[in-house]
Image (cartoon, rainbow, N blue to C red; front, top):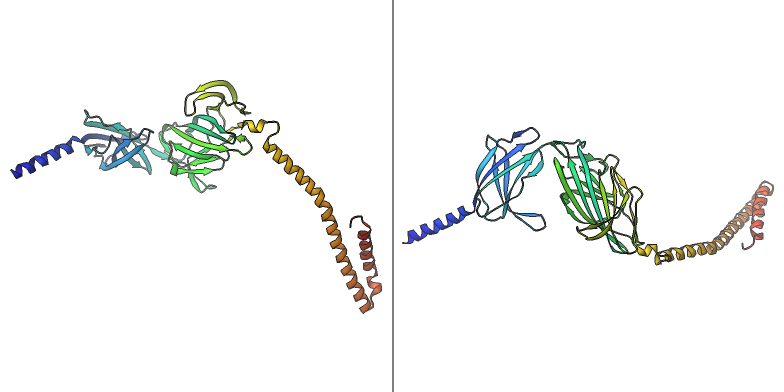
Length: 375
């Protein structure tokens, strides 16, 4: 009886384990060369996606393709709600598409590609950029920035070493001066290098289209926000850019190199009615925003500047006379000491005739200082 109970328990556990064992077929193709990767290691991940588009890896399994470049086997996916493949090729990590686990399905196929690498950026471009600017208060604006990057080759671009920054660089993203980054999606936040006028990404750029999303804010104590973008001379131009500025009462925005295209309703991160500016093939973009406090005829900032200017000019005139009189007194005292020493030396050595011309110059200068008003 006891043996039967143990056997039944074992079968229940075995069946439970098999219930979560998925049959998986995986193939990895070198899309640059057009062939499979033979006898090559890779990983299968049991993951749990979240509502924000991220994933949490719950369990990792290591496998290897066979001599035909295919893997067929089973994996325990009881811990996750989806599976995906991961492989390191030429130092670059590649992931397969995410496959959600379905109760009625126990066989899954994962086919994904790897690529050879290059340091030539000829095929990399910024095909589109959309910037949404939402005033928060008179001293703060929040910016939602979406960038579309295209690699039109069959090679993964790994970038070049930037001697000036002492770091590897795949992409320079120009941002407004003084920005404060709040959120990054689409690139590894650990592989970005913040700069005052932008940021450098070290993340490899895979073939095809990828998106980068940034959220940041810019502050200004005077209510003037310079949201201009200055790209590097060798960076790819923005093929198409749209700037959406949220309509707020008495706020103003202007640009010297973008065309105003009227108003448009926006339903993204900051819904509302927005003024729209657009441009094409740009490396540098000029865009200035002014808060109502700056546009007032006579605001606190202007008053502070004016008061400081008046005080500086008044102080300069007051101190000018005092500094002049102090310098004259100091020079007169120094001359008197020199005259006394020369006369003593001349009398002691009987050199009155030799020092006569020197004494005359010094005495004339002393009388000139004495005769000056205010000295």
